[in-house]
Amino acid sequence: MNLSKALSYLKTKKFWKEFIIMTAAMFIGGAAVYYFLVPSKLIIGSVSGLSIVLSAILENIGVNISVPNMVIIVNAILLVLAYVLIGAEFGIKTVYTALILGPIMSFWDKVMPYSSLIAEGQTSVMGDIWFDLMCFVLMVSICQTLLFSINASSGGLDILGKIFNKYLHFDIGASVAVGGILICCTAFAINPFRMVVIGIIGTWMDGLCIDYFTASLNKKKRICIISDEAEKIRDYIINDLCRGCSLYEVTGGYSGKKRTEIQSLLTQQEFANLMAFIRSNDIKIFLTAGNVSEIYGAWRPRNYKKQQLP
Image (cartoon, rainbow, N blue to C red; front, side, top):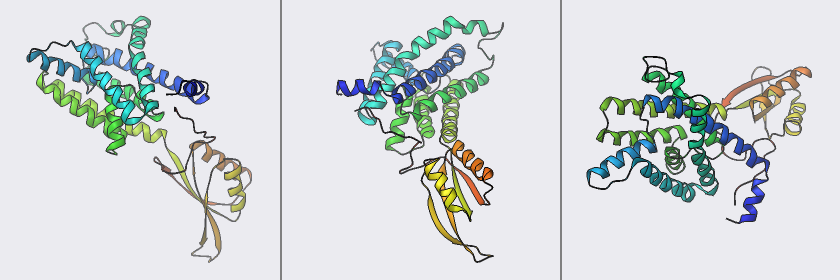
């Protein structure tokens, strides 16, 4: 990578915005692991779980590799795959998030140790393995969704999910779930049946939550407007909202009158602004609006400026 180009990228607003998002997301993910995964000893489909299985299998054939060392080996392989198969930007961002997970967990340990939250007689923060599982899945799926939205990941299993998403064209949540369930199934070799099943359920729930949060994060409004003042609305969409639109000539089935129908895709805030403009100008309209969660093609965020790592 050209050093001067990399340094120039560090000066952009896009970099600092994504840096803040990555750091905030990892604080959420680190809290999920520290407060709910560690004390409850849950085994969810992850690199840690796979490393435990591989370490035990290798030990049985006379090869001794500790679990921490196995985690480093597996993560290193996945990070190389991320850089080669997904891209430099994704690989570099994932290296950053993977490196700060440990320090973030240490931060939570100093600020509020999980032992101080465990009531007498309980073995975990929530006191029930299923409540711990749900809290962990909810928080970690928010973390993963934020990272995936900026072409990053928390490392480990997320890399595998991103590879499945890119090359097998699964939804990102399904990709994470498939990779995690495959890893969970390897744990049958060393773990009780009950714990493996709980891990599979947790991984499946994580995939569902990621898909839900991703759809919510990407949700746009597809609008269709028929009005005698279509030109005024078109002008507002193009020049004030900075959006494109399509115009169609339609004929009223009852009146036989020809009008122009406007179709456009807007963010939630832009849709609210458009409705405020229509109300303030007392424009008579017939409007339908529906939610869209996936867009392919030339649609771009407002004031989009393409900036990528070289």
